[in-house]
Amino acid sequence: MHKVDDENWRAVADVASLAEQCRYVPALAARYLLLSLREGIWHSLAVCADDSVVGHIMWGRDEDGSYWLGGMLIDGTEQGKGVGRAAVRTLMEWLAQREDCRELRLSYHPDNAVAARLYASVGFQPTDVASGDEVVASLSVLDGQPKDLNAPSR
Image 1 (spheres, one colour):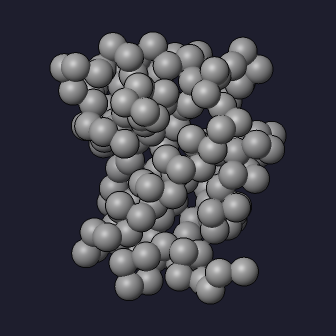
Image 2 (cartoon, one colour):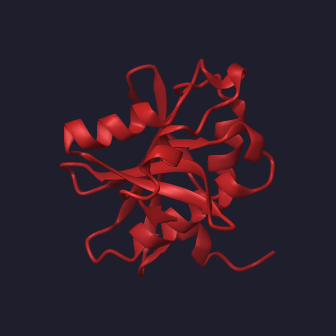
């Protein structure tokens, strides 16, 4: 992952979801970039593979101190290659290293089975809380590592 900068922002903005995903995510990552620029809550990152921008992911810190992962969009041509999982795990590990990070959260539409499987596979568990029409999932952070990453290998 890389900071969105003058060199890569256009490539990030052009990241496009698959048509069938537009029910859950915007058609282009440009919407997420605008949220980051205009709202001052989210921080956008470029997801890169082999020096090419292949996606977008953003993070933010809530008033309660939890850190949120949001706005992930992997270009349709790059999906199914593990890029999304790698981006989520990398961001999880990076946020968990923050001294004040005790919990990671994210949300997804309950009908988005692909997202639910991905997030469960890296340790996120659905909560009883909703964010609009989305399920909120969380993961505890212990000793600078997401709890699931502290588990022994199987």
